[in-house]
Image (cartoon, rainbow, N blue to C red; front, top):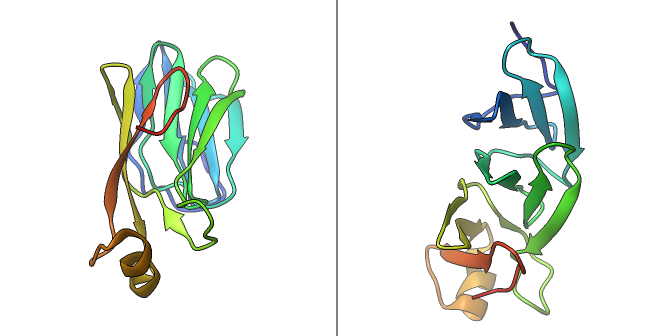
Length: 142
C-alpha cells in the first residue's frame, strides 16, 4: 500500500500494535493501519514534523518545528499534552527536529534555535542546541 501526505516525509515511521505513525512536512502526524494503509487519524501541529514519532504504552510522542513536543493518544490522536521548548519570556523559534525517546518515565529530545545570537544570550550556547527532558505523565521540565 501507499499513503500520500500533503508534503515530504523526512521522519522514520514508528509501528506499534498494528498502527504506523509518521510525521510530515505538512505539519501533521498520521496514524495508518499497518495492514491496509488506511488512515485512522491525523493530528495537526503548528509546523513541519521532521521528528520520528516514539510510540510507548498507548502514547505517541513527536516533536514539531512549532517549538513543541506533543503526547498524543495512540488510539484516537487526541492531544494529551504539549511541551513548549521555547525559553520563557522569548518568542524565537526553537525547533524540535530530533526524535524523542522515552526511558525511565521521561521523554528525552533535542532542540535547536536558528538564531545563534539570541541563543548565546539566553542559553550561552554556540552552536545552538540542547537536550531537554519532560516527565511522561506530568509534562514538567526537568
